[in-house]
Image (tube, rainbow, N blue to C red):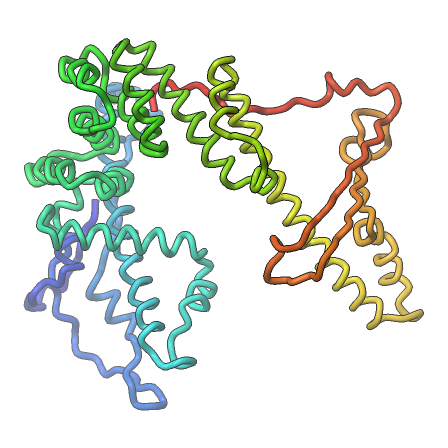
Length: 426
């Protein structure tokens, strides 16, 4: 519960949008002399602000040890307290997003070197860039839905934070229906938004056949199973979309739907991954024919994972090479700046030579060799002129050798984690 305490003898003033959203009674602050800055500008009077916004968070929680409170009453009071916190969480994040946007825009419009310094502002408050921009996105979603007429400012209180973000990503028709429910005073949760979005996709998407749309209309196939299929089909070329659509139209049942959804997912991963693997560029491999063979043998999942891991490995090699060159530069600089008077620094350099030379050597597992242990040696050979801004233009050849400790069973000590393919209820 949010309570706003106002001075009894203070006349009310026009409420700001901030006060209206938080149910804060507008209060005229007492006139106090502000301390000027050195340049004559007034400073923020925190004491005056605290008097104007005298907010106390009074969330009443039931006593968990009180046996006289029934289970139903206990859950009701907990739910009420949670809704209060949920509302405050959304409102707080919306306003934080607006503040961050103002700081960022001020930096953009100010002269170079005279702005607030958006990144420095975030650093001083220990806010990451990703968090800052997610809050800005939340504030812009709120402004957009209010400006478009879907919601009034006070209707935002009816949403949970996740429900509001889910609504902002939905189609305009779904937003309108949800906004109408919020205006009627209904509490909007993410589950309701997700259900309505799935129903809308199942009834309107052109990617699914009419037979499946009829099944969704009579609820013989829940829309929550159709929406994931549409999501995966949107990632595919039209020729593959037609194939999947024909398969679903032939057998519009839940089993077929789950199967083609999984295949569409693996197919999208295969096609997207193949385009990003350098080893497959300018090669004679026909990716479409390889795909057909994988489908015929039922190994599309394995092929898609292989292509995906190939892209990950290439990226890891490029990152390894960049770190290796950086280590060599730092090691050389430290060696030049030190001498015989710094034996411990020289010792540090000596121990790190195994990572800076042409052969990089590390040990994984038990360093004593008693349990599972592997010594990995990577030989790095580079050809061509090195351009630090264009690592991809440099040919990198890395050969790896593995030497295993004695009496170690590789098959019983190495577990390969695969992605959970259980589609279930998305």
